[in-house]
Amino acid sequence: MASDVPGGCGAYGFTSILTIVIVKLRQSGRGGRVGHLLMIESWVGSMSSLLPQAIRESGDRFSFLTRDLQHYLSAAPDVGHPLLVAANIVAAETNDEAALLPWVKRLHQALEFDGVLSSCDYYLPTVAAVAAELGLPGPSREAMAAACDKARTRRICGAAGVPGPEFAIAAQVGDLIESAERIGYPVVVKPVDLCGGMFVRRVDDVDELRAAIAEIAGFPVNARGQARPTEILVEECLRGPEYSVETVTFGGDTTVIGITDKQVIGAPWFIEAGHMFPAVLEPEVQTHIAEVACAAIAVLGLDNTVAHTEIKLTASGPRLVEVNPRPAGNRITELVRRVTGIDLASVYAELALGRKPDLTIRDTGVGSAAIAFLVPSQTGVLTGISGAERWVRDERIVDYDLAAPGKRVDAAQNNNGYLAHAMVVEEKPGAAGVSARDLIDSLRVSYDTAGVAG
Image 1 (cartoon, rainbow, N blue to C red):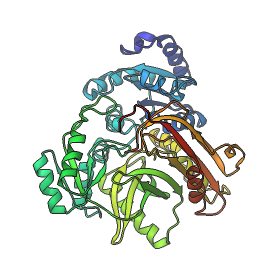
Image 2: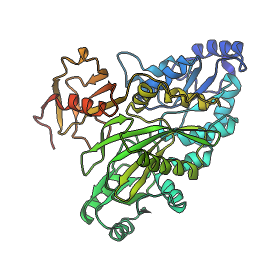
Image 3: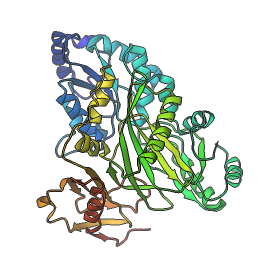
Image 4: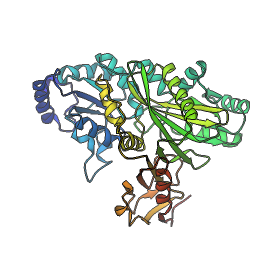
């Protein structure tokens, strides 16, 4: 049986496991209840736990394909990473799409996949390409490529009249400076491809702009070893609160599950410090925000996917920030589930299998759910976090975590360095956000800054 599988599966010593599971899958048959998903890479944050859990709870299974298993093993060295529950773990170079497609086609002949997915933005275009190659469900290659490229998203949505900021895209410093002067300071500078708010910042003058461009240019390869594009976005700085619209699109129809209130801090950076679902908004405002998100999804041509679309509510109305063609991160999907009963991680897997998801909102007894994060404000070595001693007895808190002493900490410039979080549920709509933020604000953090520069 193992000889049916393309080379590379034995790189981490999993050949015997792979052989056993091939037999089991073939005995089950593709026409049965069990669906078999191919997961190509993953984030190592919350969705790397939530998505495998959702697949298991639905009675389906997945095989995991990665170029670097150690990336996941090191993320959870003590307890073992949730992705290791995969039916098969297979090694291949996932960064070379041209070589990967025929390789996966041979793997498909052996393992017979019913769908393909990833939670990691950097591999969503590859997932769409694999789905097209194998004839499996999912968004089109063109739509996914456009949604994952902030420059292409801006061009397509701007041409279609979806409201957004004035923007320019260029690779040369001189062109970017000229565009910023035309748009007018302050402007927002951002990479066209990165995630988690990396290198996204407001700049107030040409010197800050030059520094921001140099920082982005000094990061030529992303965290997954992929060469980055040289284009950079310069945008009008939108003022107003930020929201995200959580949607499900199936068969060309988009359903708005709800709108999330996002707390963004840390100027000149844009750091997500908390989220509350659902946002407290007037019905007319909700409609206008949702309309912008749905319009962006439609003009990009996205279908058969969950999307997390970020919107700024400005004085002149809602404006598109970006479209993320996958479930929200930062545990927003858990907030949605606790309020509506809809598990967007599970829906995402169902869509990848070509199934029509059940989007019935249920009465969970929860009026609002929120998560707040402890954002580090200085650089040093964490020596302790106190103030959470009573959290274990607080019935409002459904999940929390505190970083352990000894962690090397940098003052935050993006969403990748949180020190703690607290997730809260409340019966009253709109109440959970304040509760979660108060819990985080009550924490006391101590650092050892001796010998630490900056």
